[in-house]
Image (cartoon, rainbow, N blue to C red; front, side, top):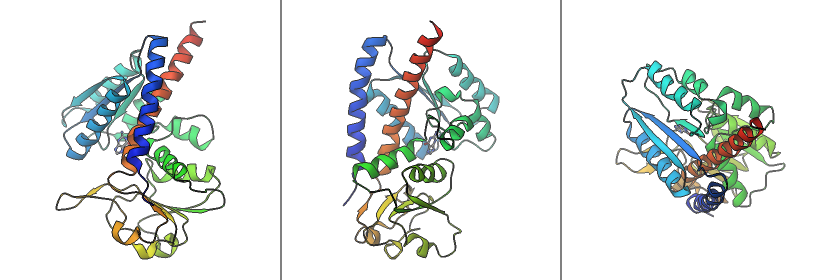
Length: 288
Ligand code: GUN
């Protein structure tokens, strides 16, 4: 079975669009997401375009702020702080990676946690690991939705996550743990990665290198989630999993493109709506 992320994401965006129409009529204001991009990295530009397109589809307000690659860290922090203070803005996203002269962690920590639609702020990370209500990073949320929608059983299953980034590896491992999977976090330096992966009922691969996983590393019938988006020399988009050899062995697999990618975007819309709802609740509480 091929897990159709594009279709699942589309259904989610349709639901959000309907909800936004109702909320905007009730509160006289639409959710608003401001997206900041620094420089002109082609992959980042393409992701940001998809994010803006989705906000328009869902009926959100928002602004795309394009800053030159030479922008100073102070200036970027000023742009963020202005939006932290601005009541019009519900969500702030700074597309990563940033140029080397800018401290990425300082940028992440400057975004107000209430407007942190990526869920990267240390306060949201802590809340996730403490089982408190948190903004959860979009890609891990999208992966859980794909697994749920494709009828995956979690309880008692062995999930192997290949990759340990703050954006995907660590948070998806936490979410799978919450679903009562037994979780192994592996990475590019795991000794005998093939043997570890072969144990996985659910295999999530987020390394950022094509061909890390081949068919002989996949347990027959396993669900394989490919988070990688890599461009080959000929310009073709491929994941981290060698699809040709893995798909015949897997019980279910996500394609690239059309798997995890669209879910990251629809979950960004979900997180923006969540920030909007929380801000409306908090603002009305503070006014009474
Ligand atoms: N770069 C790659 N993935 C992401 C993401 O989910 N959010 C942001 N802000 N930058 C990214």
